[in-house]
Image (tube, rainbow, N blue to C red; front, side):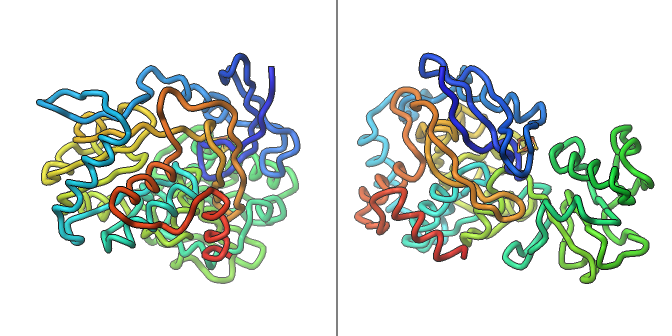
Length: 372
Ligand code: SF4
């Protein structure tokens, strides 16, 4: 048995997690005891995050749809087929969808390819707050020292380890006010004052001063918050912030589906929009899905490319308070699945494009220049 330390992919809090490996399989998790965010705890979602690794629908071979049915093909055939079709479209008809669930390195590679082709690129921030993360300096550690905590949305159910920091602050005397559209026992239990709201627009926050921290877990504009307080936006996915900081436009749900509807050639990495709206893809003439499992969106694709999941690769995630944290490869990917950035590099080569990197380290050097 061996243990590999990595970062939980469950949400943007970025807790440390230890994967327990037996016979080259991840069989369970331990919370990392020395990680400063989670201090030896993981939420239930985090504890179970390893189960996706052996999901029954894991993709192992590239697939091309022939006469309505997927046929296993070689990487060469799949990438040549994509490259031939991509060349038929004008840049304005081509869209790449990046993902807050993929690493900085994978997203950066996809952005480089999109930029080279002068194509559109974006990633969906779903219900995350709209924030200029480059300007946010509040950290998760600030929660514990705040005297007044205002929470917009539900961090207790969705980002439990932030909820734990709030509980610790409350034990030290902080006053906690929670605004949420749903009345929930867990919120009422942890708040000094709970306010049920119909919408998150125009909330009366009450007294706010420099000892106040406003934690936002709702799709609202962070810029509208009082400047005197510290503001901590909590993004949804493990690398929503990283994808945004490396320059991929963040899209709210409406903008995301609008972009999908207006794309003839669509390349989706690690996202599953058909789960929400199958019609969003009805104008797409050629669809490529690069993912770890056969999702609802992959079922609709012309080509499906199997990628390695977070436990099967090295790279980095940037959490909601902008900590760039290393994730470590614990096991090999199944079948012929490859790291996303390597798939993108191979496709670029088929198109005669040099993305300018040969290794993960090359990309990391470039990312450091962009983010820091
Ligand atoms: S709070 Fe988020 S990062 Fe932490 S263990 Fe839970 S899902 Fe994972």
